Image 1 (tube, rainbow, N blue to C red):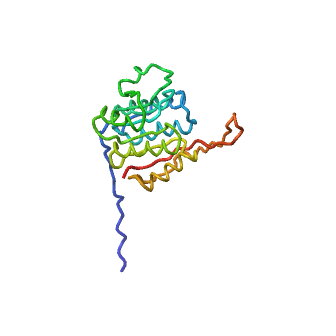
Image 2 (cartoon, helix red, strand yellow):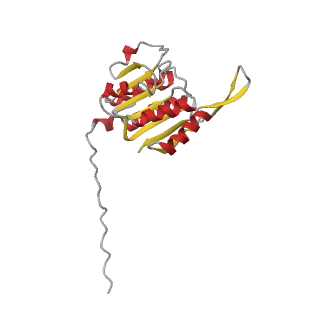
Image 3 (cartoon, helix red, strand yellow):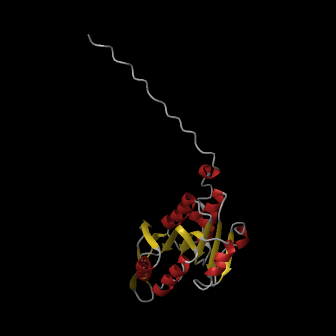
Length: 215
């Protein structure tokens, strides 16, 4: 004699989210990535904001300021998170805004990388956990930047390099991965830009963002 099937009661699963305010942060200043004057394509600017916003670093370093657009983008993401500071270094920035507008979280160091990177490190009194490199694009200079960054970053730190498709930058990254404590993560912005050097008529390749991790 068969028995009646036992009714199956659906199990319940209730998750109470953490009250950590960093999880509830909203990207209110994302538009800064589109309006700030930076030598980056729109996809690269949005990526910079998004990675800072997603990774929530405590101490950011920017090598190469120029117009200050990258500084504004990083500052916007940190401000939306309500945490973190930025130190930016450039020997002769050509700012198009008043730095005091972002001085609540950002410090500008007039100096050269890697020689003056210890001054940047001293400004935060701890290793950096996020670095954006968009300085001199020569192979020797870029490799020197990475050497300097290796000494002032914490293990696990994220390092982004702009114009990673530019052959000298690409060679510097390849050498750094072989010689320095970095691991390759990804090319999250595949914005290869095969443009024209107007004066010579030669094709030159720039663009792209490479993501490394400090080991």
